[in-house]
Length: 132
Image 1 (cartoon, rainbow, N blue to C red):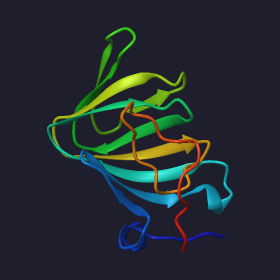
Image 2 (image 1 turned 60 degrees about the horizontal axis):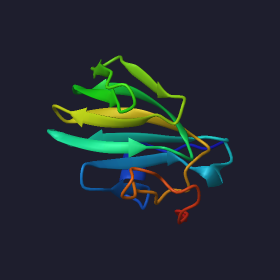
Image 3 (image 1 turned 30 degrees about the vertical axis):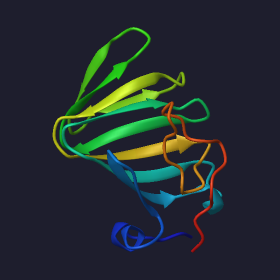
Image 4 (image 1 turned 90 degrees about the vertical axis):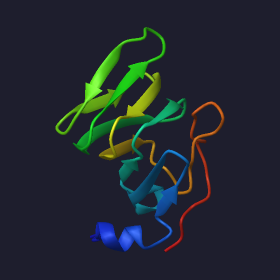
């Protein structure tokens, strides 16, 4: 059994920061669950271009407000607490946080831990592993 608290993970290498967000990686590839699970904070008034070419992701909004826009068709969806969006087609998208947002994210395949978006908004398939 794996038991971790958000606060324990936040105080460890499982907390990864980027310019527009920070993510606490609660479950990772080395946990052998077949997916990774993260609690991510998106900073207010930021737009993040993302294109997960190597991963599928589901995102559930816990707090805050924003929107997600799919680049291919320009469709915009409001995000508020209780909203789930799923990037099931490796959708290139723009994520905009109007206020600080907290979201729960699930990735398949799972992340190793240290991933951040490259210049195209992509996470690499393999990255540095967080060691506990």
